[in-house]
Length: 271
Image 1 (cartoon, rainbow, N blue to C red):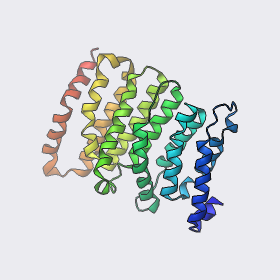
Image 2 (cartoon, one colour):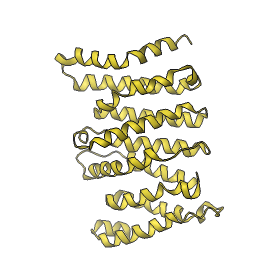
Image 3 (cartoon, rainbow, N blue to C red):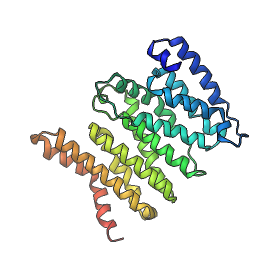
Image 4 (cartoon, rainbow, N blue to C red):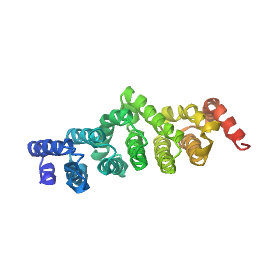
């Protein structure tokens, strides 16, 4: 019914369905032992099935309610499923010419503030890993080359905040969290390179410096691929987007920002 309403442009039916799905999600019911008895579980199943065809405004209302679930039922498996949905939705390959590409970017810009400010604790490491992947995919959508010139200035700040939040997870010791943080950062920073998001990448060498400190040594096997991905993304931009006359000045500018990080990488070999 929802898919037919979307195909026919029946906004009244879509709004009616959205209202009821929001109510189902808001009904947390932490006393239910069986996951299938949690109303949000069934609402999420419908959202996952219909998400690709729903208008942005309806999806925003549903996702904002999903992001409130941890406050209602804690780091429940349904909350992990909600983050899995976000990862899938924002991670789907779309052509820039597709109208869905722009609509998804609009959705990401509206959802990213809630993800960036969402509290994350280590009570459930699978929850944290799922959150990291959802945050990375949402932020990565906003690194698209065609989108950068039209994005509001506050989005750039939010993308940097997302990077800080992801990199902050390397202070933890659990291998599931570290692996999740590594994969999330690799996805995000690789997307920034592919989209030519130099403004974001330029800030990463400074943000990565604490990760090479002695206190983070236990996480280096996860950290080093992430630091490497920053340099790879910068080199891809240099090769694809910088003209020959500008290469020397461009490279010197990037090296001035990365010099300390490179020195830390070299010294880390002997530790």
